[in-house]
Image (tube, rainbow, N blue to C red; front, side):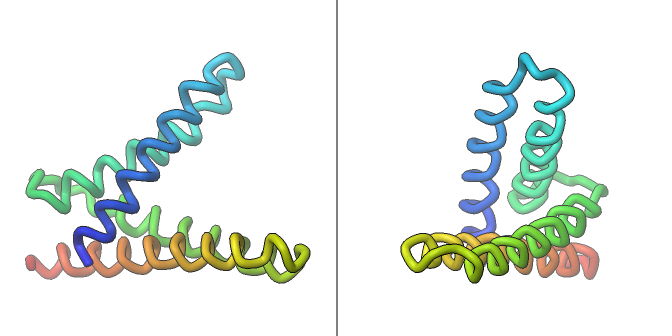
Amino acid sequence: MKYVLAILCGAVVLFMGGCAVLTVQAMPLPLIPAAIALLNVFILGALFGWKTKWRPAFYILGVVDLLIALGSLIGGLNVGQADMPIFILAAALIGLKGALSIYYGNKMGQGA
């Protein structure tokens, strides 16, 4: 499960980093994807041995991911039949990343 979370976080870092670079001319806008990418980098570092004491990144991203997954699920139910599987798949992947983030945040808090 650790590697599944790492793969999902790595994909988010690449995607959000690209979003931040492409929206750099609309200056306050790139701060949001850059912050999300930075929090995912903190999670990747903590997963692979970087001794960080800042575990709130796991909880912040976990809750945000679960809220986005819920929104994607609701959106998937309100779109046409052609787009519904894409929204449902996105909700499942984002929800998995959110649940794994919270799980590993708790696990690291217990010293494991």
